[in-house]
Length: 240
Length: 241
Image (cartoon, helix red, strand yellow):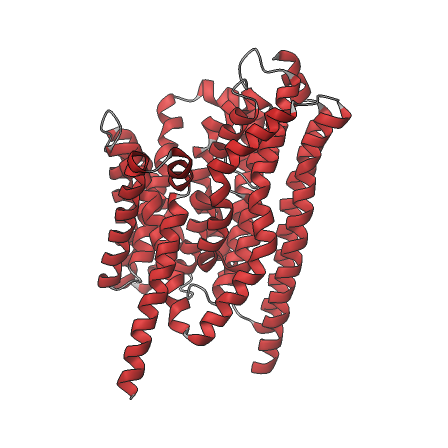
């Protein structure tokens, strides 16, 4: 176990992990430049809107990012920092990688029986397990895009509906899982997730009402997700 | 001018697919370096039976999501968003909400060109925020867990339900009530079906569908969009006729 973690945290592992994370950063830079060039040519959106988009990306991510804190710390203790960085920093999520590490190591990760060759097996399963998404995205995205263009031409309404119905039903289902599966159906009924969801919803309703009355307060909309997260955290913790 | 714009849009989409695919492929190859290094440089040859049985478990566990997620998230993420989100991960809890909130705050039509471009900036900042937090966890995670009161650490568990509540309103307010009712009823019906599936389906079918639940529901949402659009399209043209 000790030897295994020494290998898992060795300098070479850190170097490889950093190379992997660099991919995300490089992709961001490439897409940033493509988007900026496109905006310069078409003035599709204003620079204020660009700034707002950056702000919303930050506000919307900070809460959920800290939510994986505990799982990430547990994962670091089991498989070391570099693999955690390489897997959770890109492609996966902490929860998936935790399961993949357990399956790959035959359930030995975090136990004294976690031998170096089990670390190697866990790394294979985590990597190949995550590569499924990348392979499908690599091959299919272009075709899905073409298909959507064809559908758009045949009946533009379909795309109008799809781009609202699909995210709504996804958010509803994710919310259902938080509220029902992780709350109401627990052995000890827990209404805190339900309350957190309702408060989150209410904060958007309130922001919308304020903006409706006074359109000079539109900037509140940029912060809607921040209000939702903070109020949900407070109410959820009180009712816990 | 309009012509230039179309030209630029076409070029933009071409570049997105080209660079999206290149970056995904390079990243895929890079991720292989860790297991390759452990196995062939350090010589910790894992039991191939361990890997095969592990892969079978993983494929049974997430295999269906590999296909369902890229399709069902596409209407929201768009091409650029798909390449970025699947590379950076954490889609349901970070990337999708950020995209939806950006469209809402900037009043951009979901699925439009504007929404896609704005989404790129939102996703860049979302990805970097996540990496910075992960960096904090790597450097000081253990210390923070011991020093911070447990209540504060666990309060972050309510961040996601809060965001999802917010998203239901942001997206739901753009949908007419009858459609809203159908969507909610569909989602609940499928979730209940999946919950009881182990009672009447063999485990090797019930487990993968229960893991892919969100994606499966989303596919039904997409199908309903097609049906509803067809119905209204027919109505509109019959009105004209």
